[in-house]
Length: 312
Image (cartoon, rainbow, N blue to C red):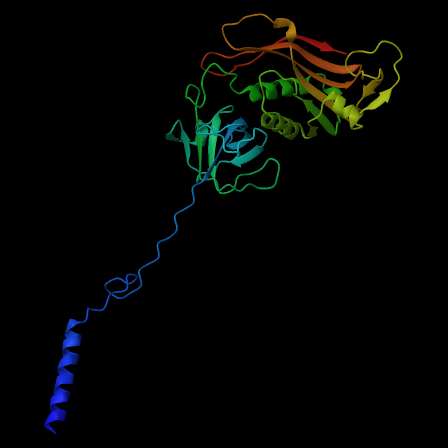
């Protein structure tokens, strides 16, 4: 009996010693001191995609027609800037606008200005495309590193004005047409493909016609023109390489080409010389000849002069 009692007492002492020496239970690191699960942090908003474009038209009413530039305004080319895409963006009150890094408004933007559009990277499958979920628009005025002076600022605006003036000259030539073609392949000034496409679209929008990006040779090849045999010497306009005369029954071809009569001349300010012509038949054409525009050192063209007008 005494041995049994002694053994029970010894076991009790050993259990008590083990309990006193055991390390305390470790708290769950996922639980705060109150025992409730720690809140999950909200994911950070993804960084926006930044697209750099030039305002081709629409700054005056906040409905921007944008031509993608072939390089970003900041950093290295990233594959997004192809110099071919065209966008439409309606500025609303909830889209922040800055000018040269300072808070501004849509009214501070100008045609010809380079802008940087921050959006979610998605665009609508339309033409022009529309950026989705635009977060901000940053513009850069003349004289900034992104928009240096001494350049052909708002060249698209100049050509759009000349084309509009040409449309109104001898209106019978383009009366009742259902199609127009715009050939800017030789237009001086180094237009990007995106700027050419934007000009064609805007020109068609202004005058209610579908505008094709085709040259005279393209129109022949694709069957838009009607050919007839020559009855004698043919005018340069409307004569194909085969010696046939061509005409466009339901369309009119508009083109802008350099005027080479000023080669070798030197000017203190950037000066552009060009001819703007519309053509429908060999005996139905109109040309604004030897047009010229001058850019100030830090500004944009304020008009252009016409050297002469020719009709056939």
